[in-house]
Length: 384
Image 1 (cartoon, rainbow, N blue to C red):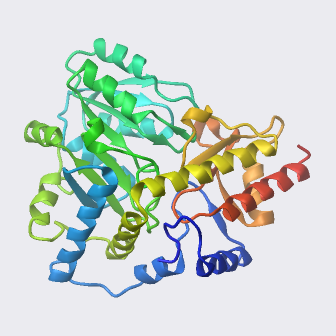
Image 2 (image 1 turned 90 degrees about the vertical axis):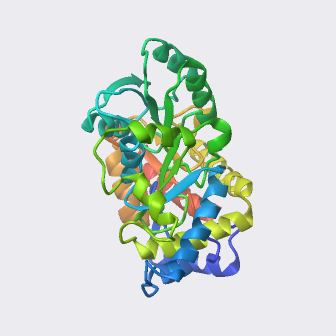
Image 3 (image 1 turned 120 degrees about the vertical axis):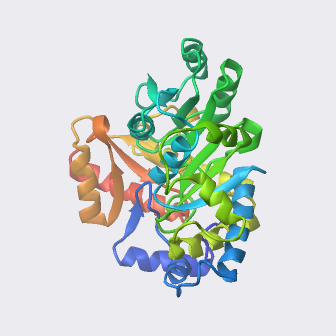
C-alpha cells in the first residue's frame, strides 16, 4: 500500500496527495481517515468465502499481527462493528448488572463509555476532569479507596474530542495498586498510533476500530481480552449475543467469524497490519508523534493555543482553541468552503470554541501545512 504507513511518502503517494489536493479534498478530521489508492482498490476487491480456507489464512495472519501491535500474548478479536461496538464488547463480556464501575471522564467519549455501562445496568461512578486535562492517577487511587468492590475502571485512552491523551500506564498502575478492578480501555483513536503495551501495563480489554490510525475503512472493531477478563467473563451476566466474545473465540479456532464480516475493511486492515509490522511498531508510533509535534508547532506559529498541556497532547489529533471573537463553527465552515480542508469542530461544551486537526494514519507534513495555512488565511479574512 503506497505510503499507508511509511516514514516518508514515496513519489507515487506524493502524486496521489497532489491529485487529492487538486480535487479539493484534504480530510483532516479525527477519523475516518483518507485512504490511498491501493487501500481503495483492496476495499473494492471481490468477496471471498468467509467459511473457507482463504479467510482462515487471513484471520490467522491478522490476529498474529494485531497481537504484535498491541503488545500482548493474549487474545484479540475482530468484530464487524464501529468503535462503540468494541467498547460495548468490552463491557458486556466482563460485567454484570449492579456491578460497581469507576468511569474516568475527560471528554465526550469518556461519557459514552460510562453511558454504555449504565445502559446495561452497571452502577457507574464518574470521576470527571476539566476538558483539556488528563485524568490524575492519584485521584483515581483516591476514588477507588472510596469505592469498595469496584469491578472495573473504564476510560478513554485518547480523548479525540479534546486532543488529550490519558497517561494509560500510570492510570493502570494506580488501579492495580488500589484495587482488583479490571482495566477496560477505549483506544479507538489511539491504538495503532500511540503506544499501548497490553500485557506489560495490565490492560484487560482494549477497544479500537479500523477507520483511525489503521488506515482502513470503517467497519471493523478490534478487542483484546486478558486472562483476567476471561475469568470475569465466566461470571458476567450482562445480556450479550452478537458481542459475545466467547463466540469469537470458538469460531477463531476454526478460522471463521461467528457472523458475516465486513470483508472490504478486513482486506485493507490485513494489508495495513502487515505493513505496520514491516515498518516497525515503534517507528509507527514515533512517526505519529513527529507529525503531532509539527502540527502543534505550526498552530502556535499562527498565534493559536493548544487546548491540552503539551505533555498530554494527542499524537493523533490536535485540538486548537479558537481566538476570542471568532465563531469556531464559522471558521471550520469557511476553511472547508474556501480551501477544501475538512477540519473537526468542537463537540458539546466545546462547540464553537475549538477546532481539531486529525493527523493519524496516511498523512504527511504537507497535509498539515496546507490545513494550517487555510486556517491562518481564514482567520485573517475573519479579521482575527
